[in-house]
Length: 353
Image 1: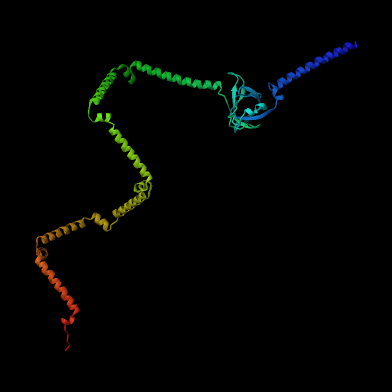
Image 2 (image 1 turned 90 degrees about the horizontal axis):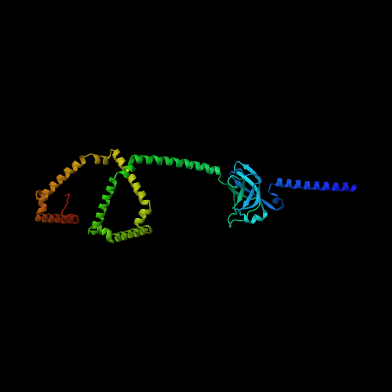
């Protein structure tokens, strides 16, 4: 009897231990929610700065190149910088993540849960360290695509309506396009124009004038090319030279002097027009001009009389003998004056008694 009770007790104890172990396993499974492997494997913490997490939840998986490597631990909202997502990654995957890695929030399927996808980064970047911050962005959602599609469809409907209105007007024969389609005059004009151009081209090929030479003779092109080369060479030499033309181009001193001279001349003109001195009277008073005109007329008359041999001056000019005699008299007077100065006693004698 005692043995039966003992066996029953041990049976109940075994059942209780099994039930307790099962409940403990169930509790651990529910508590860690798919992250049980992280409890037994070493991990490190990273952070991602994302403007909008688009419904990402705590405990969401973290993938790297399609492999689940960690989970989201915390999501903190910062109004100044956006949202900071703190997540863990298994230590074995640390060498595969660089400092310039990027985080993206993607969706499992079309309407599934959100998860965090990491890019490895560029090979030239240094390895990432625990606690580093990377940048991230959310994937465009289906509703945003639908909203953009709706706007595009509305624009397409407006375009179709305008196109239908245009086709209707063309069918009615309204507008320029309808006339182009239904009126054959444009075609006839184009046909005549093309025929005239063809005849002109044929005459040009058979002609021997300037147009034919311009088309066939390359000498004009060669001359223009040589002239262009000469102009380029002249421009290069002008830029490199230090002569007068180079100074006229580069040195502003001549321009400044001319500007100063023009300003001085303008100021002088203002003073001249506003003053009342001699220059103003010379510019505006015609009396001087009339006096000069009369004087020049009188001088012309005197010179004409002298040229005709009239009067003493005319006689002196025309009569060479008289001129020689006057010259001789002047010479004798000079000699007499000189002798009087040298020998005054010879010509002047004074006596008081």
